[in-house]
Length: 161
Image (cartoon, rainbow, N blue to C red):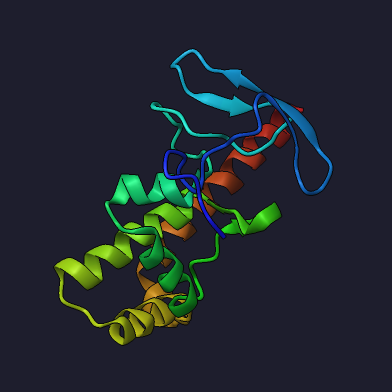
């Protein structure tokens, strides 16, 4: 499939109005900071001052992180935690959590010297860390103190009524 050498693969060529793959219509609007967003609760488009919670295309995330798009696609196959939304035409939209995870994976692989398998094991271990009495015991006195304060407040409130 030939691509236009001037237009990046993830460029929006739709103009102003759009209908997404589930039939929700919206229109592009410009925010105060100059970024572009989509109305009707849709996915935000590219903009220089994009909000942290806004969705990012693979091209935007690639530019932000300095990682090539093919590396991001490869990581999607190797790290089950990295699952961007895919819309019509298999366009990927990365959530803020995905962007943080990509930066973390990049740090572990390219700066701290982990292997892909090592990062997989690390992320899997974090996901399945069981809650044990060792992790609960240090906070129990604080929780008991909070419970006592709440009980006292309820008792005082009951006396006023």
